[in-house]
Length: 391
Image (cartoon, rainbow, N blue to C red):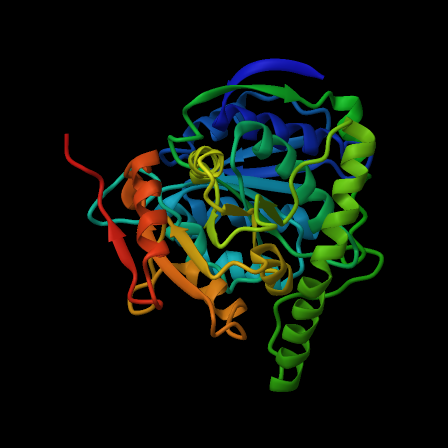
C-alpha cells in the first residue's frame, strides 16, 4: 500500500482509474466526463490519467457523459464517471437507461444541494432523487471508505448475478475537498481484486442484437422482477466482495450496515457519511457517562436491508434518524426507510431530524440536542428541522 494525503475527490479519481486499468487485459475502460462543483477535481484527475487501454472522453454535458459510459459499457468496457447536484439530474433518463440495460457503470457523486436557489454545499437530494432508478447506492464516511467502496462497487455491480450500476457518494466539500491520509491500493492488488469484465450481453458483431426496442407490458414486468431479484442478491454478493477485499488488501471495509454500542442501547442514532464521525464521538462520550446510547451507520441505501436494520437497532425503544435530505410531504428519506423497516415495532419511537441541509454544520451540540429530544418523546412526530446557528 502507498500512504498519501489526498482530498476526497482525488481519492475517488485514483480508485476509478485503478479499477479501469485493472480491465486492460480485457476490453479496457472508458469514462465520459463533464465538470460540476464540487466534483470537478475528479474529472480533472481522470483527464490527467494515462490509461494502458482506454479513453477519458470530455463532452458538452452530463447527459452526454453518461451516454459515453453506456456506449462503452454495452461494448464490454469497464465504465465510470462522476457528477453532482443538477448534473446528476441532467443525466436522469440515462441513469434509468443504464440500469434497464443492466450495465455495471460506477458513478462517484459528490453530494450537493439541488438548485435553484443555488447552493454549492452538501446534502443528498441529488443522488437520493434517483432512489428508484435501480442503481446501487453507497454513502461513504471517510476518504478511506470512499477508495475502498469504489472498488467494492465495481466488484458487486459487475457480478453476473447483479449487473446493475452503482453510485458511490461522498459529502461535497466536507469530504470532497478536505484531505486525509489514505492507504491507496497498489495496481497489482486492484488487478487481483477486480477480474476482467466479461459482460455476457455486450454487443458482438458475430451475434448481432438490438437494445432499447419497444416491449409489451408483460416484458416490462419481467424486467422489473429481474431487477428486484438482483437487488435481493446484493447483500450476499456484497459480503463475498468484502471477504475477498480483506483477503487481497488485508482490511475489511464496513458493510451495508454497522451497529455500534447497540447491544444494550435504549436510544439509537441512525446516520450516514460524515455525520457518522461526529455522532460516534457523541455516543462514546455519553456511553462513558453511563447512558445506553448506540449508533447504526447506514452505508448501503439501495437496496435498503430492512431485516438487517431491525437487527441492528435491537431492543432500543427510541431511534433518531439524522437526514441530510428532505422529501417534501414525506420527510427525511433515510427516516422513511427506517420507519418502514420498523413498522412491526409499535413500541418504538422513530423520530426524524433534518440536519445539515444545504451544507449546514452538524456539530456535537446538535447531536446532543437530538439525543436529549428523542429521549423525552412519547411518540413519533413530524420531522424536526435543525438549522445551523448563525455566527
